[in-house]
Image 1 (cartoon, protein in one colour):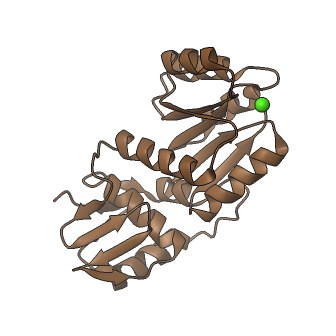
Image 2 (cartoon, protein in one colour; image 1 turned 120 degrees about the vertical axis):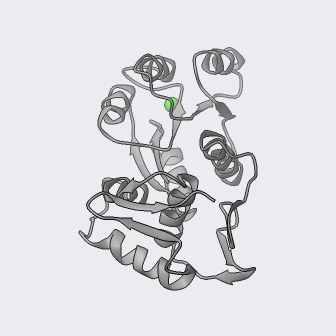
Image 3 (cartoon, helix red, strand yellow; image 1 turned 90 degrees about the vertical axis):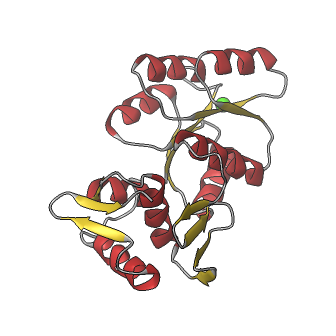
Length: 219
Ligand code: CA
């Protein structure tokens, strides 16, 4: 899962970045509204965390730009404690959730999980696919009820494939769910992770669509 963080406060931004990366997300961080609008035109994100008080272009203006471009990505806004009107305006202008500063990082993580769950059309917190279960909160994966150890990147690929069951995911799309733009991308990394996933979860789970990518069939 790849997230965009838009926050001009360096200390807070660093804290959120570190926390979300530890939770296994690929995170890109920009510090002003104009850059945020530019990167969302070229990069693909699963969710956006947007501070309202930003230099050059306010968070509310960024939100307007995103929504008039037709972007349906879930957006969580960050607002100041006394700014109730910002929260109301944000929600009415297309934000999906908000957090009031200062906030708890674990709560932010939980809200992001809820946003990602809703945007993938699930209501159950755990993803169940035949004999496989994946819990995005605890990062636990089981096969026939037995816990399976996955690396954070294997976990991220499996989650993306399961959330999109029935749809072919291109190698590029899977790479995007793994890496933020500061990371080096090894050219065959996705194939290696898929190989490991098949060894751990069974060869029949993930099918290769030659020249296109990978798919987990719908149950
Ligand atoms: Ca700010």
